[in-house]
Length: 249
Image 1 (cartoon, rainbow, N blue to C red):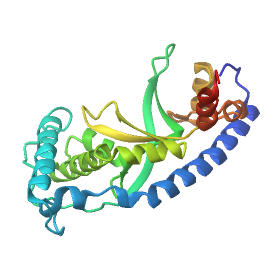
Image 2: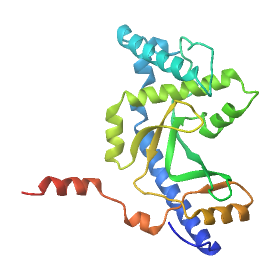
Image 3: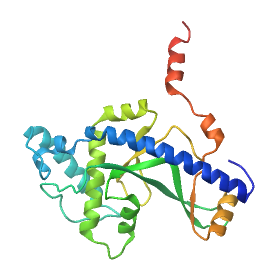
Image 4: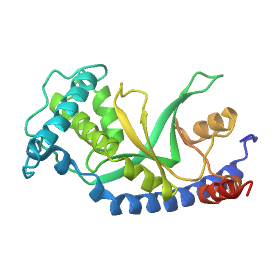
């Protein structure tokens, strides 16, 4: 996206981006809510989860052992450096999935200024009450509560484990054109996050536009933009797959 700084054009593009993003997030949230029953910590961990019914002892023991290994490897490392063991039984405050903004930092080449960038078409899946921005704040707080940090790490690890053990869920989201993937985010060590991506691509304008915009707004944040061209370039994966299927017949 190459363009000179035009305040009116940027305002229109931002308004357009916001409308598109709201519509896409509403659709993704609806899908996530409908498929939430397939995210099944109670089934996987059984009696190792507070309030859950007993199930196949050997199977739940295997899943909990793998979760402990994940926690010990990731939770004890930077930036978390937790020393507490995984509690038994696990007390999950929330198991309702929710979408949180996907943010990352971009350093502008000329000024060296760090800008917090938000994606309008990709989101992080987390349990409700465990906002990703709050998680980031807890990590950076020198006076942070170890108990609060523990809860964030455990809830995101449990969610990752449940989703990684449900490959069918990924295929369902892909069929709905909202791809589900696992990524590591800067500032969160080796903790893997589940990302839901819409079928629409967003992009950043030239750095000069970002710099001018943040200077006018008086802040250090910017949102990727979605143009009409981004919508027109969307691919229909089913159409492409069917075309490949009949090619050469």
